[in-house]
Image (tube, rainbow, N blue to C red):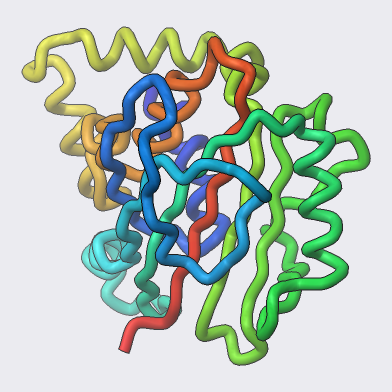
Amino acid sequence: MLAAAIAAGALLCACGGRSVQHQAASDQPRGHVTNPSGFPLYPQSVVTTVVPVDTAQLFAAIRAADPKASLPPNFRGHEVIAETPATLKQLGAWISTLKKVPPRGLHEEKGDTTPRATSSPESDGGIGVQFATANGDRSVFLVAADPKRIREGIGPAFALIDSYTAVPEMVRGPIDQQSKQQFGYSVTEMLDAKSPIGAIIAEVKKLQNTDRRAIVVIDTSRAQ
């Protein structure tokens, strides 16, 4: 169970270990939600959720475990979740265009941890890329995914998640305490819809039985 949660968290850690708070969404796309990021979304996609992002909690946990740890600057911003009926093939073509002609002031970040567009994203369930400014003060992590295929691919992990959240709090306590000390978040917090991993899980569950894809943009800037 813990491994499944950490594995999901690795997706966010790849773009700086950002902390995300997620607001629950209905099963159908809500009315207009303003996109605070200047990063362009796929045409006619519907923004359903906007949540704050801050690395402070994660970095505080790392410093508590290792006061001498060398950490990057704190980043703050927003996570924007949008939904679209476009196929992954169409979204892959869109991302390929962005890679060739990034939004003004950004370039593709080609570090080893950057998720890459595959030649056949429709067969993988998702596609991602990271952009950044030349001075590194702003980072944009973009992911387009098919929640239905992701759910099919890691079904056993979701079964474990459901089982964990169903057990009494007193049973979860020791695991939560250990996770809190090591990662800054308990597993319960991770799986809550207001947490980084919980936001991902909630979106997958929401769209797993639909013919819609999810777009996630994590747009953060160096905190002043």
